[in-house]
Length: 291
Ligand SMILES: Cc1cc2nc3c(=O)[nH]c(=O)nc-3n(C[C@H](O)[C@H](O)[C@H](O)COP(=O)(O)OP(=O)(O)OC[C@H]3O[C@@H](n4cnc5c(N)ncnc54)[C@H](O)[C@@H]3O)c2cc1C
Image (cartoon, rainbow, N blue to C red; front, side, top):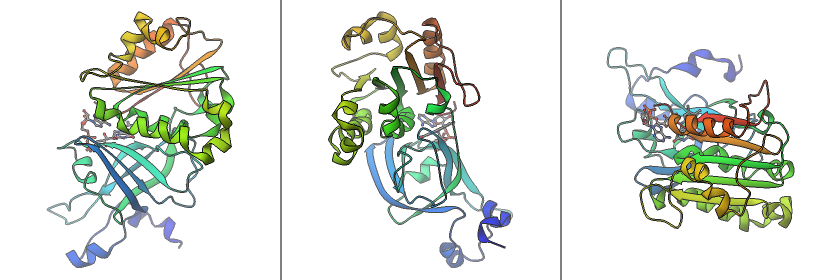
């Protein structure tokens, strides 16, 4: 039987001794190649990519680590959580952008990974923040808060984003300035990477606008994106006519449940309808996390 068809090994393992357990390769294991910490609540990491993994930029997968051994049975089960793939679909490696929840079952451990460690990655990408779920349009808005920037980190490095639209506007809102470091660096990388410039051209690069805002710490632009939209300030800042049109505007939203609901209301107010893979429309939404 090919190793990929061993459901027993895919779901749980029974370490015999500590030494044996240390040598066991995790099910669906990928090796961590790089880790970067931004704040005490945020980090990113890269892993090897399974040769068979195909995904659409913007999708998420389940990743995780082996959980603690059950005190009764001694068995370990994978502890998995949904994670947006932050790297574009053409990249050889996979990148993830993660929160650190100090008492979070997964991220209390995941935040300590180092290059060479293994993480579990279930190679079944899914999600609605994909180009296929939107009807063709002229202007693409990407609205993120916190780690909700992760799927956009993927989409913004996908040449299709610039082929499909005349203008691409990404907003990222966090409480503090340091929490904008990851998105700022990704945008900088996009603007300065020679290979990417060759792919999408100067014309493609000129389509991209980055609009970072903070809600707590003082920064050049403060405020919730919902307030900035409602007041018209965001449009004025970008030199745009106020409002959006279902004829030309498309949007993707990835934030807390509260932000998603508020933005849905605003977008529907402009006449945009929510789309899905099965029925593309003018905007799509995905939770950045549950709770
Ligand atoms: C579709 C989808 C995609 C996701 N993509 C990502 C991603 O790319 N990066 C990422 O870090 N997380 C992402 N998450 C959240 C992720 O699945 C886990 O919740 C997170 O890794 C914390 O896991 P945990 O076991 O440590 O804590 P959990 O028990 O899962 O969460 C504990 C609490 O921490 C808070 N929390 C969890 N995740 C976040 C977060 N990302 N930002 C702010 N607060 C949070 C919530 O209040 C939650 O109730 C995604 C969730 C969904 C549903």
